[in-house]
Length: 103
Image 1: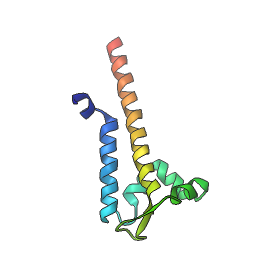
Image 2: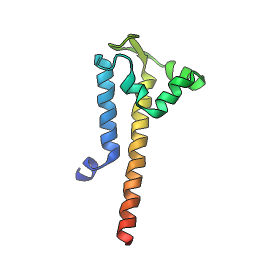
Image 3: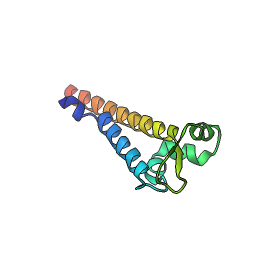
Image 4: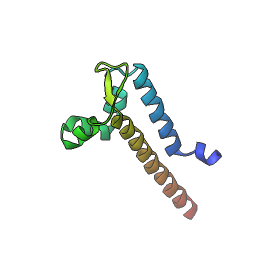
C-alpha cells in the first residue's frame, strides 16, 4: 500500500478522476482542464481529423458544460493519458534510483 501511494501512476489516475468529476458537475464548463491542459487530447481536439471524429463518436453523456454533452471517449482518453504520464514518470524515477545506487 505504501508503494502504491508513492507511485506517480496512482496519483495521476486520481487527478484524472477528479478532473472528470469536476467536468461532470460543471466546474470545467469549457473543457479547459479536461482537454486543453492535456497535451495529447489538445492535439486530437485541434486536429479535427479522423482521430477527433473517433473520440467524438462515443456515447454522449450529459454534463453541466457549455455544450451540455460530451463523448465518453474523452473521459477514457483523459484517464489513459494520465496513466501514461504516470508510467513515464515512474520509469524516470526508477531509472534515477538505479543510477543513484550504482554510484
